Amino acid sequence: MKLLYYTRQPLEEAIYAPKLADSVHFALIEDGKCLALLHNSGIVYAKAEPGAQGLLHAYSLRDPWMTRIGSAWHLLARRIEVDGAPDADSAGHLLHFVSEDLLHFAQQPLLPETDELARAYAGRAAASVDGLALPEGCIPAGIIDIPEETALRMRHRFLPPVNVANEVPARVEAASPADMARVKAVARYSDGSTVKKRVDWLLDTVDFTVPGTYEVEGRVHQDRYEFPVAWHKADPAICKWQGMYYFISTNDLDGNHSLYIRQASSIPALATAQQICILDTTMYPHLGNLLWAPEMHIIDGKLYIFHAGTPESFFCEQCHVMALKEGGNPIKASDWEMPRRVVKADGSMLYGPEGITLDMTVFHSAGKLYAAWSQRQFQPVDLGAWLYIAEIDPKKPWQLKTEPQVLTKPEYGWENNHVFVAEGPFALYHGGRIYLSYSGALVDSTYVVGMLSMADGADPLDPASWTKENYPLLSSRSVEGEYGPGHNAYVTDEDGLVWNTYHARPGFYATQQGSSSERVDEKVIFGARSSGIRRVHFSIEDFPVLDMTEEMDLDPALQWVRTTVVVA
Image 1 (tube, rainbow, N blue to C red):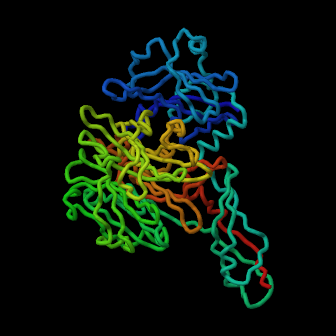
Image 2 (cartoon, helix red, strand yellow):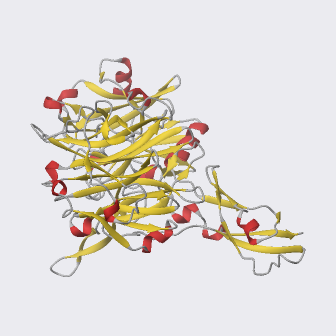
């Protein structure tokens, strides 16, 4: 199998900026055609480096070259400034990445051009791409041979799987509709992964009082969520509490001055459920202005809302925790205690007054409770938003037990596009790992979802426990018409399926007219931040897939299944 690696031409700034285009892209070559991976988006980016006063200095790359030495692939490239200018600090050196699997790339110290490997880079031949149908915008750099099993893993990681079959038992014994409700379909996908799904059986022809055999049809069940499911609702999260589901989000409609909650017996019913205000900026003097990013968590049998708030401006936003009173009703504002500001172990302010904290989430590992949040220093210089982590007290989840430490910085181009931001963390447990997704870049059309993960039970405070993906799992290129997807959260439904809630901006192309009424250009018009819901699939390697659309999840041509029902 052959692999094309390349950089690409940028599109308009709001769609695919130069900072994104100047990265390494990959495409599998099959029968003279190129199959672009990750939606023809970059997978390997140059890391930002800390400079004076801790400021991160972003870089990009060009002219990549790859070779294999032993079991490892080596990727070399020229480091450049994000505006395309030469990088003076790396003069005489090259960027150097090493990968064992072509899925993860570890950036090494800058490689002197006198190194033997760097000399091989200098003598590289131009890529021959004659006859190839290249991906859009491709600036070819080279082609290498890779093993079939490596190509298969790249396909599984960087292409969303699609539904290829839905199977049910050929013959089932049933004495009632309830028995049939337990007969599920096994949905199979192109990567070999499977998931069990409920079937809506058509049982009108079955008389469960009369023994015999009956041929029945059913449709594989799939909850449908047209995007958006909630307009002007950002940072959405859903929690299940005492048999009911609750939806909560940032309210962009009133300028982030209230928190509304919806209650329903199922996740689909939340889309049309009545929304009820449980907190607004008139209730407490210490929360008299912006209310942001709420999410509900159950800790030791109690329900809490973690959110950010301030009586002043954005530059004073801080994490808070609000507890539901004993026996309280979550949709009744008076049943919630006054929000408390999160503090350190000694009772001092979590961070400030030189910066802000927000987007706090919690998760368990090895019997301990941890908080992760976004923290941004503004004074004496703006460092951008970084993710922090600490252990917290489950009896008082507004108080840390350990000192905050950096979890990750917005070091890649997709995290610092337009602004240096890492925020909105949320944990997902699956397959013995904790996946901590988070969002990066400016909250505009370039917002994205990244991923950290670690073995469940490892020490979250040890940086070595975490693996960070080099690329975003969800971006404006993932699903057509959804721009700037991010600040996501997860919920599991009554069938055991995991759903991803997120916000994005609806977008469409509009023709710009010149004075002569002739078409001049097409430009994307973006709508307001609004909520979406999509099922989280787990690949054959148990890695979360966030960009599987409804049609990929359930092929309409395969949705009908048949079985023989035996009534004894």
